[in-house]
Every structure is written in structure tokens, then in C-alpha cells.
Length: 284
Image (tube, rainbow, N blue to C red; front, side):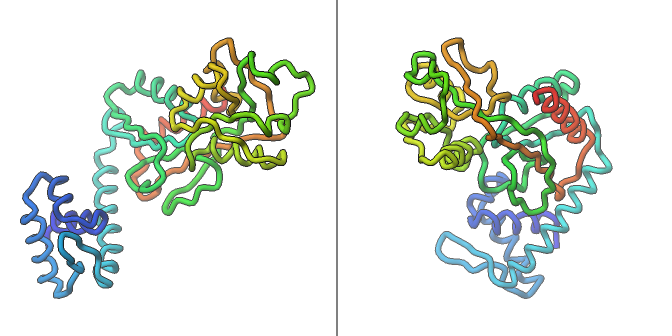
């Protein structure tokens, strides 16, 4: 039994395609296929059910996968622990919310540790296994992760000064029941916050524009195309002078950092987390 065989097995189990795994490892598909067949012969079990160009785990293959993943993860963590260097290596971060604060921290971190590679991905809702840390909304259930509160922010309504309700002194959130809303994509923190706030005030938002790009959301508000529910601190200073922010009483958004316990917590990751917490505290 070889280490590469086990890696091939795990990836095929995850992806469900021998050709895709072969491309990932830059080897012929026959190499992956033959390697897995040798592993099956050695174990004297069928690891996969094969149909045309697709493969799926057999019942015994699923059991074997659970133990192989744990073993490979322990090996990777052992290597990481013995080679840990705060000044080199990589940090992988999923940023599902508070993009500005996190990226500002990345900028500060890179000035101190220029040789550390920081890989970021925005709006991930599926496989979190490869990340060291995930920045997301409160209450996310991630297997193998522990959570820690980062920041609680007051929510506000962003609207153009030319918007009809911008100068209303006794403005209430319920006044926006017929207003066009500019909103982030589904499954994002702001999407859920917007729906929750509007529901609290007795209406569902009339969505005029929806986008996963915060810059586009802000631009549309500046152009007077609608209103948006935004976090007051994270987005403060992100609009031009044509936009005003009206705080929404008793409505907040809480952001958490989720730490992947399946991965070795390196010195560089600890330092990044320390800097991120300081940055969030300064923003509150």
C-alpha cells in the first residue's frame, strides 16, 4: 500500500471522476485507475461502484475513506508541525462576510510577513475542508471547526440623498415596504440580514437588484437605484458623499471566525488571527 494510492483513492472518492483526478495530478487516467485497482486487490474488496465514466464509493469504500482521510490528515499535520515557520508557507481563508476588514488585515499581515502566501476565496458555501479559517455569520455548523466571535455591528439603511425618504426626520424601517432594495446574493450574511430586518418590521423587501459584488451594490445605491441594508462599521466610508446611512434600532450583525481543527494551527495562522481580532476590536 502506497501513499500515492491513498491520495488517489481519496480524491476520486471526493470528485467521483478518475479522469478529473488524473488531470489534477498531471498523470494519465490509466495510472489512477490501475493504482486504485491494485489497492482493491491488496485489500480484497471493491472500493468503488463503476458505471460508464462515473464512479461512486461502495459501502466498504466509504468506511475505508473515513479512516484514510484521518490518517492522511494526521500525516499532513505532522509534517506541518515539524516544518512550521511563521515567515513562510500558506494560509487559506474563506471570506463570506466582513470582506473589507479581513482584507485590510491581509494587507497589514503581508507587510510583516511578505513571504507567507495568503489565499482568499469569497462566498464559498460548499467544501470548507481546505481552509485554515472561515469568516462567516453566526451559527454556522462546520464539521471539525471551532468558532469565536469577531465583531458585532449595528445595521443601517444606505440610501442616496436624492431618495424620497432620505430627509424624513421620523424615518422608520417600515417606510421602506414599497422601496426597491439592492441586495447581496442568496446565502450571504447580508442577504439573510436584510430579509430578517424587513421581516422584523412586517414586510418582505422588493428586490430590484441582486449581486454578489459589494462594489456593485454600493454603486447602485450611489446611483439612487434603491436602498440597501448594510453593516455600519464594515461599510462605513465605502460610499461617496451622495449616500447617507440611517441606523436601524436594535438590529445587529455578528460575525464569527471558524478555525479548522483538522488542520495544524500554524504560527502564521495564529498571528493572522491575532491581527484580525485587533482590527475588528478597533472597528467596533
